[in-house]
Length: 95
Image (cartoon, rainbow, N blue to C red; front, top):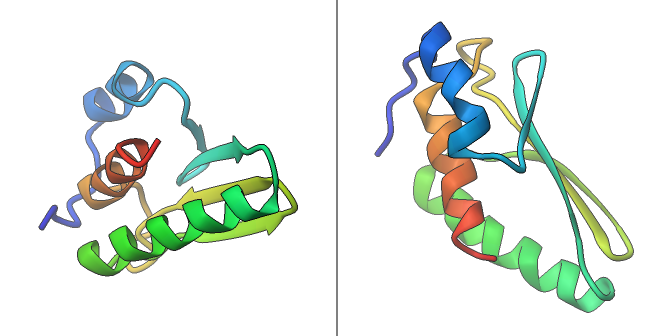
């Protein structure tokens, strides 16, 4: 499992290339996903939930019809960590 060590400034800077569709908002890694309809969005959320359980790391997220917005951070550390990056990469593999 990925560790909860805060990202270094170099690691944060590299996120743009490593996860180009994700944005850093404060201490959160965020992305909005669009789908054809509610069913596809819900199926995606179910898949993300499985990955979150595997990592024991759960996002803040919302769903509105065909849109799923995910924000992930390590609340106990109050910073972005390698665990957040591992979570985002696991989500990317679902697409």
